[in-house]
Length: 249
Image (cartoon, rainbow, N blue to C red; front, side, top):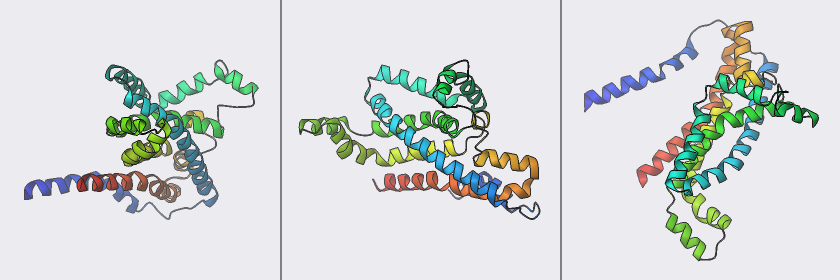
């Protein structure tokens, strides 16, 4: 038992070792407040909007997939996996083509909507890269809700919305929170697709990359710390709470 525990501790230390890079001397850190704060504002505000879209569209889809017959559910999950497995850079190129002037982009431009280097392009890209993660995780959470309880709620006179709010959501809420945290960190940290479709306005990943190219590591480190503090706590905390709940069950 002791040997296995030591081996697990060594594994954990090796896994966390890259964080030691935060303490490597790279020279005096250079803080460009204007660039950093603008990147933080862009990332947090637009990612929040993207998450509203993801939850608004993804939750009904997840509920439908979770309650679909087994064969149909398999097909829906296979389709969702395609969006998850697409390489980010390839997805960015495909989005720029699919929403470009030779496709639906021409129609959008007539209405004043541009799908390149705009907040709209940023949000749409984040939705595409994250919604598959949310729906798949939400399906797993919703599948854990006993169907018999939902049926009983319906027999007691509750409509579908009332059944969801009173029965389904309270039971699945922690799993849905996990799904949202996965989508949040996936969208917030996306670089490959966003750099193609929305180089401007620059979120934190793009700002880190441009600062690294133009000014080197000392200019990157302050924004990198903010990036980690913004991206890591939510999914980490939700996972810890989920495990505590499971351990008490």
